Length: 521
Image (cartoon, rainbow, N blue to C red):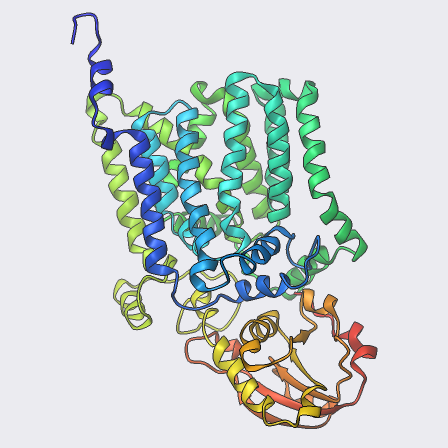
């Protein structure tokens, strides 16, 4: 090293490649893939996963309870690598790995170096809610990388002044809307944030409005589908609110739930992100800070589910990590960065079995009891042996096997007239997924998008009914009925423990009463 060469330049040049920021991020992303191999085959198919696979048999621009992107992906999986648990959970795991990489890239773009990049990636890996979402084949798996990529474009615009980047940002926003509608609220907060920050100059240029137009154009077919079906998603949201199904939290418990979702320790990065955005060093990126605060306030005001904010946290981890790195440059504070990393990893690791099914059920129950952990609840329902997300992975094959056993006892001519009616989309979707191996026909139902798909020509002369909780309905509607099985399974949700009925001679033709069977909640 020459006298004119700084020591920092020497250390950066001669730093072992395994300790470089890129290598560290790659290692953390690889950890997420390794966890996929431990968790992918456990425990079974999640209720919503079965529903999306059923929707894939009805390709459309929209559905009652979600935009179409997740269904298109399900269709693609079914026609390529298949729909085994390994195949179904591969894309969410890859999305989780992508979120880790994007959070690290964002930290770098915000001015962070190796420690900031590492802390952002570590938090994106270890946050329990992000682990959970990157395990299940749901819309929630794909929101975090999409939102973080959008934030990365916003930061690039702020740094470079390249207004043309609003065009790919708009395209990305349109795609994200087709995944889940929640980003609309965050984008509204971002627009307000732009007006309140140095990026307000973008609002006077044409490029952001071109981007908005392109995003709206991409989302337009879904809007037209909703419009042509009288906006079933809004009806669904209204019904859920009226029935009080979701757990609604006041502001302080809502904020506490956010901290628990992030494993408690990582929430400090969120607080530091706010300091970063509203300090002089983060002034040019302040629109992202406003977007989060407005989004948080709107979700609390609308009593949204606690996990609706999940996708915004990787970008906040990045900003918070940059602030930590800059605030701990003095030797006195050098210990703070590794200490924070250890605490984030350790506390989140405690919640790992709650987020990913890496333990067998007996070992999980023992672990949960020993650690005294209480899973977060998102809906009002009877507590089960397992947390709600895990409980919704059990009982489906057994239920369908019972239906098939009875169905095979019917004469062939009666089988052709027999409908299998699911009162809940989970039951109907389970029949659609597990039923073909037994020769069962596709199910019908009045719940969510199943109602739109109609009675499929059945009249009601012969019906197997799943998910009926009131025997008086069977007495009222059927000429005769009997119990042919029970959906009770020890590890499933208790509110799913219902008899399986066989109804003969429905007193009304299904085609005539179908409008009254609509059940959106």
